[in-house]
Length: 188
Image (cartoon, rainbow, N blue to C red):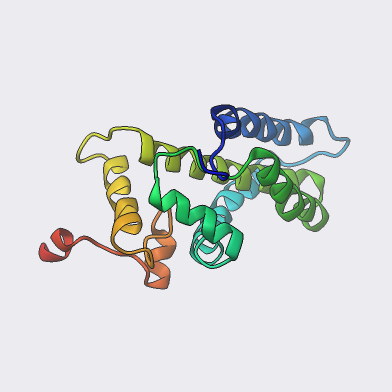
């Protein structure tokens, strides 16, 4: 076990902690003293998910491949993709609290900020879950997850300078970093 590898409890903690955080952020506006239009909260939530996809892309491309500590951690993940290497929940929670929740509350107000934060954290949870299943589950050929796993494998084993999106390659297409396999290029 490397110094970056987590014990199973620490690795899987995200799958318990973040659904509870999301539920808390969803309930918070209902118990606050101000009325919030549910459509505004839902719009903030969906906006948070969308913004997360950009954050996911930027963090993977520029932080996990360039900043020293994170580059080393991510490099170990590339060397051993099925190892339980990840961000400890205490660290991701602190980063999400300081980088997303508190600024969202300050900028959008408590109720709408809770919706935006719940969306961002839902995006983070989707990323964590997708990344886990891409490395640990068998995929049925022809399914969305199979295609996503193939695109992610290209990032791991052929082109570390592309396919940075894990839950979606949308931003890879926007920024020109989407990588297709030779087989896919041959079909064009």
